Figure 1: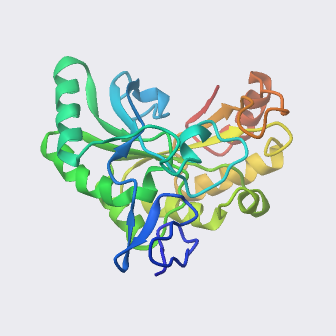
Figure 2: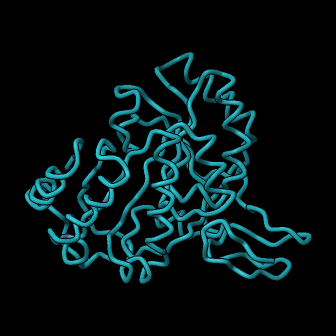
Figure 3: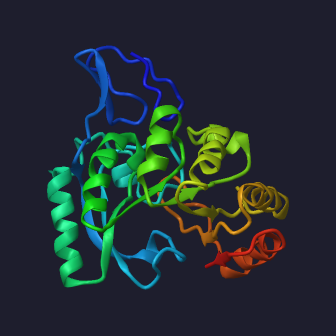
Length: 272
């Protein structure tokens, strides 16, 4: 069976998991083994997603599972993104129970819905599609924080059901994406697909010596502007994590300098 969710096209035998460590071939079909299996649950400020222009000042019930469709050497959440469900404890939460949790949080705080985040949520897109209508019926929002590695039916369904995305655009280098298990064209296509249908904000994490040159930032800004110059663009600072402990943290002078490049082409640039 061929899994077509992220565009990698993993060819899986019965019982075999894909590159993401979460989708599995079972009984002649491919499904997310991590469906409803959550390793992390928290109430976060919406700005932490980061979404600065989607109901700012509110909070969001944030949940994460395990697995990822990429292998970023600098991953900030590698403890769960690179797990296959055997290392970290997880709890099963049904779509209805998660919706009830969001409703309860909304009654006590300014919670506006659920954000699927922390690991790569799209590898279990079926759970998101099952939960979104329940959230909408309750007057709540469905939010996804993603690396954007999604194609085909999954991409179209997510664009239809999700109210807001934050999508990583990690670099504008095909080689950089390839080295980290991704495909830049897949990500660009999803940004172009999702933007007219949902609220979209984009994030680039600046890693010194990897994706921090002005020319690359100019290409990123050109692409975003070609989709919509009003898309909010977050330029964030790298901190040493995972296999990138020998790279120094990025500083605000670097992100500020790159923000000046992006501001010449985009209307809403946030650097921090």
